[in-house]
Length: 182
Image (cartoon, rainbow, N blue to C red; front, side, top):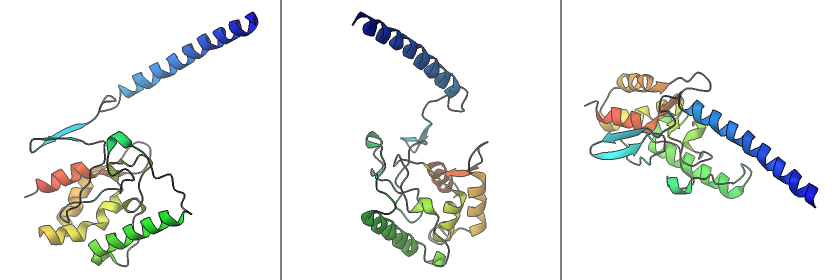
């Protein structure tokens, strides 16, 4: 019995050291990031927005982000946990595709970017691909009476190209810049 307690105590100490080293590395690594591991807060028109949490934009005059499985509630961050073979999930995605095509009739024969009809694992993804933003250009150009070229330039200027991974566009920042265009 005494041997088991002693072994458990030693294992606990070893794990505390390993986990402590790991947490120190993660914390130090976060401090070299542009936001130093903190939320990126944007104050706009007297309101506070978190740029690293997806926002719900429903108006036709804005770019729309990824759908959210948790209705953009940061307190309940989660995915839908439904497999791509789940019939209910497939119906939900098909409804999203139909809605997106109805909102963007000019894009009827263009492949729908996957992130515009599927929720992310957290349900709070603030970014879309450059293709996802370009898919929505004609609708926004028509509603805001702006040229497609101006909107393409706006998207290009707001596209982040990280060292690793695909390029992305933060929907909140893009929509704020869109509001500031006129």
